[in-house]
Amino acid sequence: MGAERAAADRQVRVLIVDDEALGRLRVADLLRVESDVVVVGEAADGDAAIEAIRALKPDLVFLDVQMPGRSGLDVVRGVGARDMPLTIFVTAFDQYALQAFDVAAIDYLVKPFDDERFEEALRRARRVLALEGVDRARGQLLAMLLESEQAERAPRPNAGSEGSGGGPYLERIAVEMRGQVKPIPVAQVDYITAAGPYAELHVGDRRYVIREAMQALEDRLDPNRFMRVHRSVIVRLELVEALHRGGGGDYELQMKGGARLRVSRSRREALERWLGS
Image 1: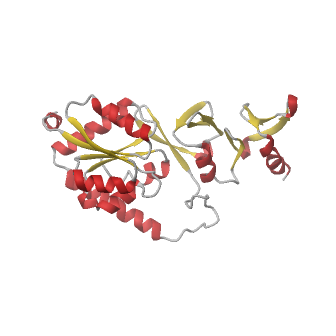
Image 2: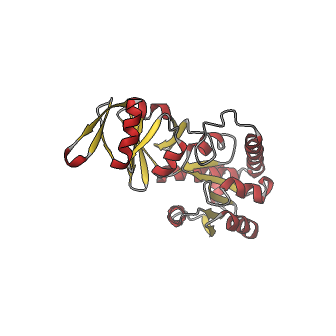
Image 3: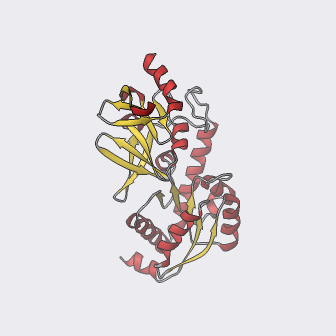
């Protein structure tokens, strides 16, 4: 309690970095009610973020990991881990949440995050500032960068099992629920459906919403295990039971769990080839 009280006695200067305007607005809105926080700037890409960090010298940065051009990790490299302010990473994809953050910074938020999870991350940042734990946090960032650079230099054993994005196929997808991040093995995902700008993982009788586009998921899932059968549907192939033709030439897919899912005409032939193989 004493540490948090001490943190509240000083203003926390915050920089928000996200290539999406709505992402920046979401964080800014949540910070607006915090009397001890002042947003000193925003940046929409990695280059602007590096400039803003150097010029504004914020105490805390909410840093989006996945940005076109320079990623959040590239920003840390550009500034230098030893010169980075406290960092709360913001991510939408498990490869960062499950690999980088266990080693890294103050906290991380998986989009879409709720108000409670945001408050928890902000409280943690306040405690670190109050206890002057910035040097330790920078050391963690440095360790993360060294580890990620070693991983990038290491040869990839299965060159044939990569998505079009250049990284290995997903084995886990991080979902946030009740303020906690839970890794969902893709082998447990029955199918995925579009939910507006988000995607919805169907795992048995459970559903998990993640902030990811269907195309990005299709690119990162093993095509020997998953197929996109409609612009709004991706299925795990081993759970496909039958293909049904409906009225008007429409098709539906029968899954082993009982779900019936739409199949587009453009994807039907590929699915029939798989069923007949």
